[in-house]
Amino acid sequence: MTKKRFYITTPIYYPSGNAHIGHAYCTTICDIFARYKRERHFEVYFLTGTDEHGLKIEKNAKAAGKSPKEYVDEIVAKFKTLWDVMQISNDDFIRTTDERHIHVVQSVFSDFIKNDDVYLGQYEGWYCTPCESFWTDTQVGEEHLCPDCGRPVQKEMEDCYFFKTKKYLPELQTFFEKEGSIYPVSRKHEMENNFIKPGLEDLCVSRTSFSWGVPILENEKHVAYVWLDALFNYLSALGYRSSNETLYKKFWEDEESEIIHVIGADITRFHTIYWPEFLSALKLRLPDKVFVHGLLMMKDGKMSKSKGNVVSPFPLIEKYGVDALRYYFAREIIFGQDGQFTPEQFIERINMDLANNYGNLVSRTLSMIIKYFDGIIPEYKEGINDNDKIIEDLAKETKVSFENKMDDLHITEAYIDVMNLLNVANKYIEDNAPWALAKDETKIENLKSVMAHLAYVISISTAMLKPILVTKADKVFDYLSLNETERDYNNVFDTKVLANKKVSKGEVLFPRLNNDDVEFVKSLMTNK
Ligand code: ME8
Image 1 (cartoon, helix red, strand yellow):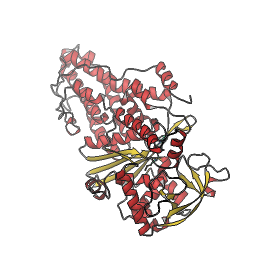
Image 2 (tube, helix red, strand yellow; image 1 turned 60 degrees about the horizontal axis):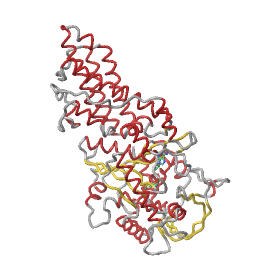
Image 3 (cartoon, rainbow, N blue to C red; image 1 turned 30 degrees about the horizontal axis):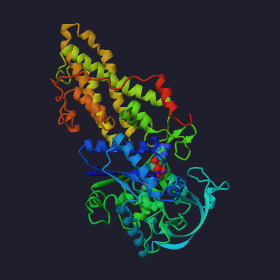
Image 4 (cartoon, rainbow, N blue to C red; image 1 turned 90 degrees about the horizontal axis):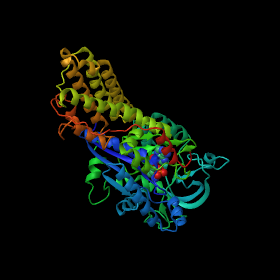
């Protein structure tokens, strides 16, 4: 059952290097979903931010000759610029160095101490600094490599607080059993088999060997483990435990709100095991859905800052526009699966779907309406011609399937359906040959009907594409002369809206790209 409100979160990013398209991918997908829900008139709170504590940041800052705060401030500013350029519509940006967040981490840690959820002990084991993860002897194997990222781990021995993970196992199991709580289910099975079934070990939730973290009030030698610290951003951003808990009550506490965390596959364990456990310890509601997306890979593996095989989104946006990159993310990489970034596929996807399919349909249709009817869109009438039926039926089916798929976060599949509608509409032009109809006066009604059906497909496809095409969709609505009310998602599917509107030709929406573009994108790759 669809809820009234949506709380949608991206992970908060480590400002330990500049953002790459892997980061932009996750944020963009969440943005598309948030915009789609807003278009459908749901109340949405969309959060992103930065995760600024921990050993990795402390080390990077030292190497750069800066204080950790100076170091993160500079990188956080670049993340914010990127989200502005990508037109990410987040409602808030949380930083774990914000006072409002530090207060929450300290306060919940105090509760963990008071309620006997944590105990003091000594950690002896392995630590992966890039992942900020603890591992056991068996997990790192003889080679002493991080099971998540494959990089060497370091032996650590220090005093710390341990969180009693077995205490909340029943709550965790209920969370795992709830249908749809972890998507795709393969990720859920992975967590069960790798971590829950072998027996959860208590988690080290504070550190004493460095100082860049949230100090534990009861024991200032300790700072909170960066993952405990980071996960609470989802609550601190809503004003949890502040003097104003309105957002928290509305978007977390209230069952009418659906809580959705979108994350990358590499951080599944923290979001599906430890986060539900922390929340259970505080007797708080658990998220409704943790949606795990795949990773953007390069030929030599995961695109990552520490590997240095990254592509910056900025030059791509500058040359091809923000809509093209956003579309590539939504359509090329099947949401939920890994995807490989290649310059050829990037260019091919934009050409095939945006230039040839959508752009071409818009351009041909508008030109014909101008040529044959002085730019006035004829009235859409259903069931007049048999050969229009294919469009009429498919338009209705596409709306239903698009919404069902989007609601389930099957974003790629939803846009495959929209592209299919556009494809069929292009074929409908060939099959009906309007240029031939225009030469025969007895066929004028047929010609009108073809133009009305094409304009309709363009208009509804534009509405469905709008969460992605943040700059071009409104231009197309302008060419169709639809006002704000008429282009509203709830009105645009009405077949009467377009009747007698005067169209204008407009610019080429997505110019065709060629081999030079492939070479340009290649030149942006550090590992070609
Ligand atoms: O993990 N393709 O931060 P982070 C797709 N601070 N997604 C990618 C990616 C790639 N190549 N590389 C990274 C952290 N990501 C923590 C999160 S949340 C409470 C704390 C995704 O900057 C990655 O999967 O290393 C993760 O979801 C997000 O970017 C942040 O990664």
